Image (cartoon, rainbow, N blue to C red; front, side, top):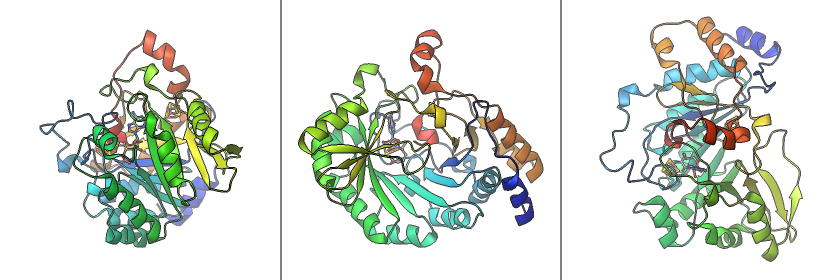
Length: 350
Ligand code: SAM
Ligand code: SF4
Ligand code: SF4
């Protein structure tokens, strides 16, 4: 698309879905592969050694991802997050980052990673390529719990080092994400809060979600965000802080003693579908308008069969305009009345 076409698209009335939500964020899963087998995401009993991951030629090429991202930028997308699977296992990721960084209109380019491959040199090369923020997942500080969750031979120390490497590479922000599941790692909430208190890194707690069908989710395994805040606040008093921008997913709390802030993502107990501005592109080129979708819309076929930008734009525009997803607000009814298969987290990223 030329700069003129881009301006035309961005100056036209912002694209809204059927519930009046504006498209703003694009999450791109660059691979379905991962070197971890987190029990809440890619459990080994379902994704064991023999699991058939997608053949490489089925994955979108970087040029294809770039094209889709550029078209979306023309429809209002400003933020892009790279995810997976584990995005750092995709070869030459920096090449993709450079391409995405060069797209007009994209103001924020971030990555979510388990950090096991975040060496000092890798962190620097990601930063040099144009990545500006990094979120790193870490669910426990004690080796036994960490291993019970990730089910691989990687140490907590390796992840903590990855976090430090990212911090020294000069990203605009490095956040740490912890999924909390009752009976698995809820005893780690306070140790994690203590560890990152005063460190300059924002720790965010995520409620365990019923994404996909393989993690055996039950509502009783969710630790409510408010309960997490109360637990921490009893030892390290917290007070709420306003959102950085409208529709921010994490609710912010700051330590009263000046030790920084935490975030809580209450996707289950206090859903935020009303402001959900995200679309997701899977590694094989399917678009999902909700994390809990059953079906995606294939765009790879159109990309590979020579459709021009105008035809693709029509399809993308139609997809968002017809969107009316609000799964988390209707979770209980949907689960009872229409149980169905949902796409796995490792295919579309968090
Ligand atoms: N492999 C990378 C990582 O773990 O950061 C990126 C992909 S991972 C699917 C993205 C995020 O989703 C991680 O923070 C992970 O903890 C979170 N996640 C995975 N399954 C989840 C679930 N069932 N509920 C809540 N968060 C989940
Ligand atoms: Fe891999 Fe991330 Fe899923 Fe864990 S949460 S299995 S690191 S994709
Ligand atoms: Fe967005 Fe779907 Fe999550 Fe609601 S349930 S916030 S629509 S991804």
